[in-house]
Image (cartoon, rainbow, N blue to C red; front, side):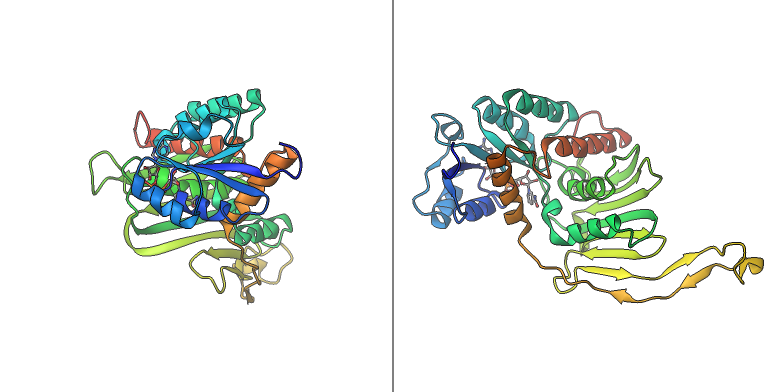
Length: 338
Ligand SMILES: NC(=O)c1ccc[n+]([C@@H]2O[C@H](COP(=O)([O-])OP(=O)(O)OC[C@H]3O[C@@H](n4cnc5c(N)ncnc54)[C@H](O)[C@@H]3O)[C@@H](O)[C@H]2O)c1
């Protein structure tokens, strides 16, 4: 493909989420939606309504073979990701895989290695890394606005969507784990979790996850698809301020609370009394220029292919996230994921 040529992108899997890729890539500058592969004909019909005239097939191999595509998006069930991504790399294509990259770290490492050897791009759709609110959190950390980071906590709860192929940890926690790794620039050394199967045997519907990072920062994530309270938030608590990202609050997704508590230093007038000093400051909600994260993610995919550079959410980040998920499974006493 030479510079200026239209990039031909195929989409594998046109379910609830894959349909969004059909929508985005059918309206993308300098990209041609080269085709959609989906075994359920009714879903292919939906794709055809969104992208009239696009090539459709029930056999994904028709998209991988025959020089029809330069790159593919894999938005199928997690259990199929490793096999499909492997075949796409072998077919010489650049690949964007939905989260979680695979269901084992060994498979994730295998894809990272294969893509390197083949000189192909491997990207993982950790959508929150393309969310302007998360960029704001990263900026606050970079500029030291929050002070020393004490801990991170995140909640991702609601009723469903309950998946057949993975548990709530593998379905929901990749979002929070990818954000924690991206924000802190480090991977957890300690992983602990408690979980419970309520709806079906052997498939966890709720999990309380604790993480510890080399810097000393600790993290807590609660995921559940059996909770009537819909929550989608992440808090960073620091020595100077707390930043709160509420993904359900479209008007004010980020709020910074300049409040905190400190131990008096020798010389402070309160030192003799060992009183904690409570600081009561302002609450600021910075303006966030919202963009659709999936669209921004697709832009990074296309630009990375054209410039032959690593995307922000590369295969290695996907592998790190899978490594944490696998360690969570181990603390739950599960031999094989998910
Ligand atoms: N990044 C995000 O924010 C986000 C949000 C939702 C889902 N997801 C991820 O997207 C993926 C798909 O989720 P979903 O909700 O669309 O699931 P879904 O079950 O609605 O859709 C999956 C589709 O893949 C199709 N499929 C299965 N095998 C195939 C094959 N070999 N070739 C082509 N198509 C095949 C199925 O028929 C189905 O239509 C999952 O990995 C999920 O974790 C990501």
